[in-house]
Amino acid sequence: MWLPTPVYERIPQFWLLLGLLFMSSGTYLGFDYSLSFVYFGVGFACCIWSLWIFSMRLSARKDQRQHPILEKAEDQQAEDVVADAEPAA
Image (cartoon, rainbow, N blue to C red):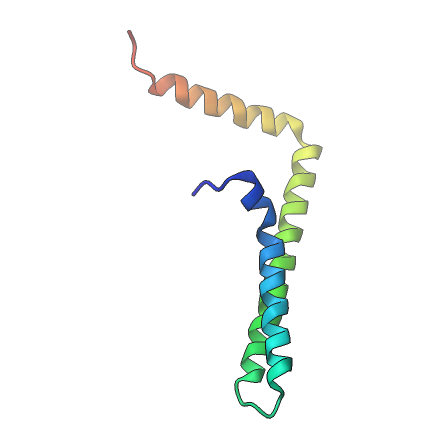
């Protein structure tokens, strides 16, 4: 599934905001309320998920910078696939 670049780049911030909202909701309700622990747990999980996504993207970008030859090879393979798919005139 393709997402526009601004949306794709903001996904970790969205998950972090969602996690902080859940955690603040759990705190606001107070720990006397039985579901506040669930809110807090879901919020914590969302925050961890956002950090994981962010770290995976950083490592992938670092790998691309270290291996520009691989990126060129992948681009060439994509061009070959497109060229093979075009009908002969």
